[in-house]
Length: 134
Length: 198
Image (cartoon, rainbow over all chains, first blue to last red; front, side, top):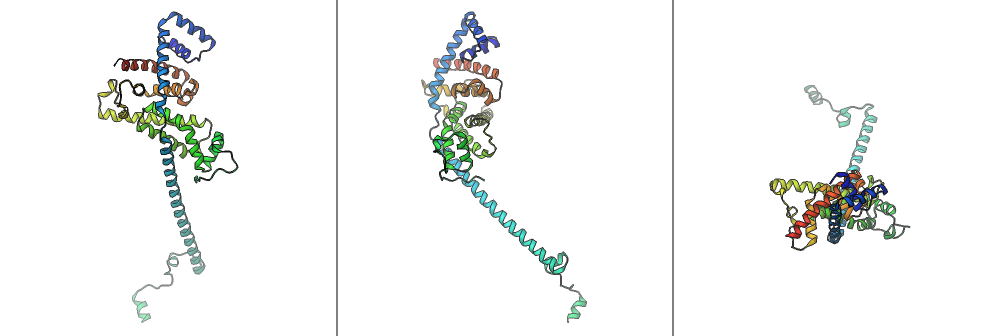
């Protein structure tokens, strides 16, 4: 069957013809008896499909679907709690470091590594120093 | 971060009588009862499409669950341009097509010469093909269609969407829906006649 006829036939079958197409459909049915046969066969298939819808029921899927969603929600909340904990630890560490830096700057009037590490006042451990202390 | 609670939604009608927009808002606010209601309202339709696409199989059940999980995880990006049921159907079809392709690949690796004949074992769980069991025949017959044809049959004939809606959901032209449907009906007719004559 030609593609245009095929389209008219399926549209007729689905009751979706425009008024112009309606006359083409009637003409097709008059000229091609096999088109009527095809319509009957399609009708039979659709009737069987309608009868079979019952076997597509969702059954116990509602409970299992909700259970999966709840499990995922619990997991997401756990991940969120962990994220919050890590975020809090990071903020506290950053604040402590900032205070330490501020303290060093105030004490030393400059920002140097030795001050930051608490060894700014130490002398080098060489022979002269050892003798002087002795 | 949504924080699901089972506390009823304050100052609002019962969930069962809520409009889709209100229900969606309640879900977004984290009310688990609203999510339950949303799943309850749509699970039959989603299941119908998944089972028409994949047969009565555990894969189809996975697709149903995965559809709602995808929807739930992407709630914030859902803009409610289409009805929730339409959006869910679109997700279901995509997931089912992916699953069907994965299944075909597995089958191609396991049994390279098996795809040429009518193959009732394509999905293992539909194997229990009791003679005279029309539902099982139809399940198997649907699996013999190309997935693009199966999607059109599932939406237009089983789910009851109009041809225009089917075209929108599948993102294909109207004419393509019609030609796929007529070819699918022809093929189903041939396959079912074979079964009837067995």
